[in-house]
Image 1 (spheres, rainbow, N blue to C red):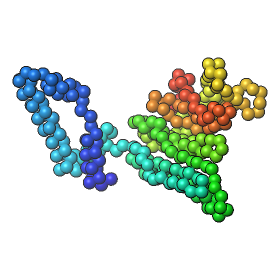
Image 2: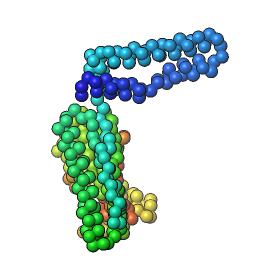
Image 3: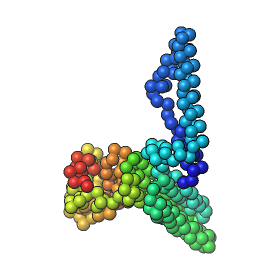
Length: 286
């Protein structure tokens, strides 16, 4: 990032700074108090605020050294964010497609950032291209399809430590189906987070799986509409999670294990998630 870009970023960050509650209270008290001496205090207070703002903006505009120094402060410095890079859409021959492409910005490790963004775009393009090819075949045969695809992304958490991003593909062709892909980044080490990396010499697969089974059983007891494939005696009973099971981290820094539709229950259950309590995992985490 060059000096000009850093200055612009600092200005943007400044514009987003919220007025502290204490200052807001002082201003409000002054406004609603009808005494003349308080009006004078209000004018002085507001003048002070304006002066501070002018000094801050002036310093940023005039001194690259100030900008460089502020850029190293975590709150005002570089921020990791997720933006929409583009959208691939198609509405032709009975096919209705919309694919949003996410882009991650602000990682210090530019190779990781580049690899991640290339994968996000590659996956989106490949999915879109499937429908483009299908549309060509339908048009060639003078036929109409009946399919819809919505591909979108959601930032589950983006705090000082972790970025968790989920890409969801919702497809409808007679029945509906949802598949998801998960991207979890440790922002301090700037490395992808995988389940195995979170535990050391611990049978995390069994620990997590047993907790999920317990949650499944509890849900089925409390809700007659809930049904999971456990203890049925069938080969497709849920036994354990996969080593690379999909997951994300939520805003409470809890591990959420995710299953696609039909993975652990009938289609009526849809895609399901299980939040693993921290007290279950904490003794075993790295």
